[in-house]
Image 1: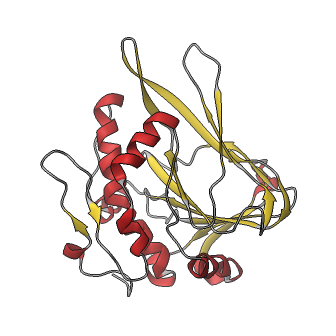
Image 2: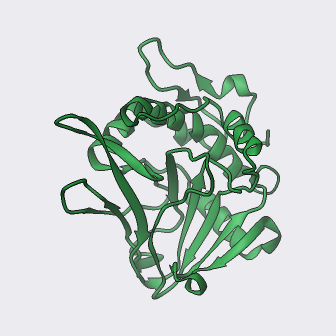
Length: 262
């Protein structure tokens, strides 16, 4: 545990007998998380394919994360996207947020249980497995499968930079949801750079979704696919995500993926 995180038994109120989502209790420095309505976010996710939260981080907290970009000792790898035809820009994977960036580790730990609640409601609709209720248990399972490498990442795009459509899978164990947090203010710190999601719909044309979060807001979206009710039950709709080209300024985003990588 880090300085932001209280004892484990004080993090959440338990899920209700009616299956309500666990609530994140007020935590020093991250009080905004306790105000999230997970039932509403789940409904938005099912309706739109992407759910946008209220601001989770202050401008100072966003800047704290942005400033880590120029501290190479915090990262396990750096990817220059044009070298691999992933797009244009740079992203870096944190080596160990638990010891080097407590704010990111705390976000990952606090957001996981209600995200697992959503994922486990999807599980029977997708005919897939359920997931443990704590991040610690998920990461232990990843380690047993040879997935040891941390996956939270910091993305930076300057003018002309963009991300091709992709999915963040990394191994056999794939937690089905992730969250990306905008660390700059669109229209002030940068222009362009909209988030783009493409949903493949069986027997229909694909659907594009453009999302424009403000400073500190998070976007919750599927890693691979989501369930959509059809005439004969639920269908899997594959989804990929990317970023439109930035026009001016720098755009920084924190990506929180819950499963680790091989």
